Image (cartoon, rainbow, N blue to C red):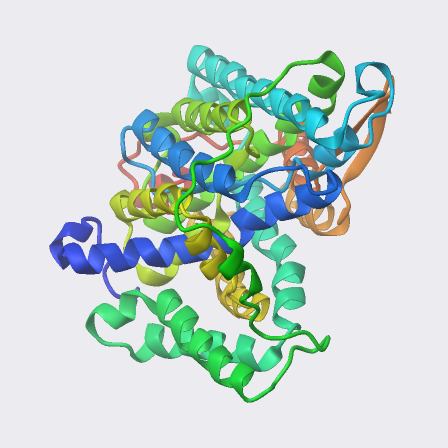
Length: 456
């Protein structure tokens, strides 16, 4: 028996003020990870890397573009992808050919050009799916494959949550406790904005602790406001058009193999969360096109690749508000913030420990969704083939913490742990005998219907 509160499919029934708050909640969920990517890339490029303003603009516009392409049906937020960090580092360290005498800032557009090509590769896979049909493709992605992959998505992020929370366990526990309290005992609107309440209340606690002289575990100040005074209130984004070179393309584009596999897992997770079959409607080909074009657009204007965000999937599960409109509000907020470095810096003061406390809940929710995927689709683990497939996916997805790097010519290519897990799971499911899965099978028998449907 499902004792959870009924899901809200149309947030307009809550009224405009509450919808605006729900969008704000999703923005806070994505913000930390989204701006972390340009911060890390800036380190690789010695301060001449990606712009936080451009990153926020690309995430917001990319999300809106994704929603248009997916018929406004899929409640997904597209933030900065961490999968391409290795590619950025490789391009930054290129010192031969045309890169020999380049500054770091001159190399960056070529890395972004590689991202554009990576995004266009999504369209190739989408075309294949459109031609052969999603039913044939999804035969290779039954719940015994997608379920463990979703579990891995959440668990692979777990070390990040612990690392962030360990900066200040008191703040992390306050954020976590507030989320739990409002989610379980909250009334009315407070019950569906537990993440936002966790962020606000723990930030107030951070202000008090900081005023009292408390520091983080490493001795650093809990809150640092120095950059806020320096930042301008309004400033246009420093867009930088991409450039193309085969070397950079060969570094960045192959990473799309990994991110496309992760995309399928993320769409399966979102489908499981909201109880809709997005792989069939609006279709996996449309979600791939949306993600690919959003990534290509981001690279074109000098931003990082985009990807569907698990943090926001966790918010969907926790809030039980499944209306894509609130995601689009978060995207609009991101675009607005991209015009104001000062407001971006204010939100950027959010302590890492609070992000860790929030992530404890969100990342765990993703893994729990994967478990539910397996349970509700009645995956039979008395069958050896199913045990083998699940076991290999879990060990690969969690064991290859640094991925697998190999060299083709002079180009280093890294497949992430999640990409490897997806590839191995798909191959085993195709090779091992006994694959009787039929995607979206119609049946008068309820049990057969539940067994064959991906809808959670």
